[in-house]
Amino acid sequence: MLTAIRNARIVTQDASRRIIKGDVLIENEKIKSVGQPFSGTADVEIDAAGDIVMPGLVNTHTHVAMSVMKGAADDLPFNDFLNKMFRTDSERTDRDISIGTKLGCTEMIRSGTTTFADLYYSEDVIAKATEEAGIRGILCWCVLDEEFTTQKGSPLKNCEKFCKAHTKLKKSRPGVGLQGVYVCSEGTCRGAKQLSDDLNVPLHLHLSETRSEVNEHKIKTGRRPAEWLNDIGVLSDRTVAAHSAWLTMNEVRLMGKAGMSIAACAVSNMKLATGGVAPLPEMLENGVNVSIGTDGSTTNNSLDMFAEMKILGLLQKSSRWDPTVTKAQSLLDFATINGAKAIGMGSETGSIEPGKYADLIILDGKAPNLRPLLPENIISNIVYSASSLNVKTVLCQGDIVMRDRKITTFDERKVMDASEDIWKELCGR
Image (cartoon, rainbow, N blue to C red):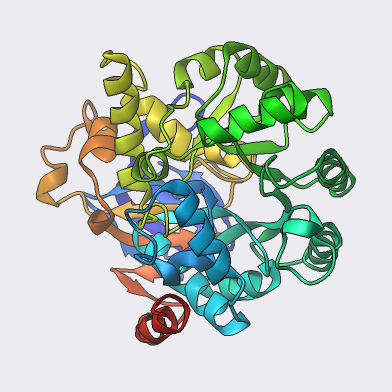
């Protein structure tokens, strides 16, 4: 199966960050050539004259099944928000988790995300729905102490069972999740890390999201969360820590030494008013791999990575009174190649290069918000001017999951129509 995308402006995100004009040829799941004219006839022909072809975005922290719950707990203090969401979570069914996942995938497809990292329970249900949607999930089953969970049985054993049973999906991959140090004992954390090591899968966790989380853990253990996790051997190059907003320089250095990644979640942190800003310049200086996550639809209300890129950059600039930090190219790196590295797929996706998966999106280069469009401003336009409305076509692993703004893999209207009834059942009480 050959797919040819013709006459595009190609933002490769390769090692040289080349921007070129030409064709992208895809053979089955992978990119065959980039830039060179293809004189033959492909099975699928896409005219991208005037448009932008770029890597699909990688959202490294979300809770996709919560998409069906958006607007259910807005404008609440953080602890009240958590209590309400924990109660609602305990009442969820496989059907509403599946619909929530497809609703979230619809939003991500329409806003150019081809891969997302999820942290939740019932990842088996989420895996099935994600495969049907046609994009890629790095699905990390949530692990926490049994005394705090609504799961049946041991969360760690549930996670192990899920991971071992879901190694041969076409696109999605399993992973290990940790809810956070506030509900995970040393034994639980060590067990999760060991499982991640044994199965060679990502270890995804919430880390230092709030000041109270940090202070309470320090009172309990004498150490800050990242220091404690380092001391018990949990940090590694497979660890992806969401939020990471309340850190010291010592913690940043430890995280960099471990080779770990963070998923910055600027919108979620601001909406919940948890304070703290992830120290991205210091992280980059110390070898921490920085990527971007939206968090879930109850703390962000949107899974739009274009919006997240821009807002993250603006928050960093504003909080430091320095417009030179987190430049446009860095923000695009966070959302593409760095995101791929965070989930252990840096050699497989995140850039448009021969041999990598054909995970790419086409933006409408004729849209007024992207004009004037020149090689000199194309990166800035993508980061600071583009929106989800510019996304025309999306491919994941060579499959066209949206073409000319029509999703091809499932009936999105049925999913959206079902979402209102589910919201009433879960959140309208």
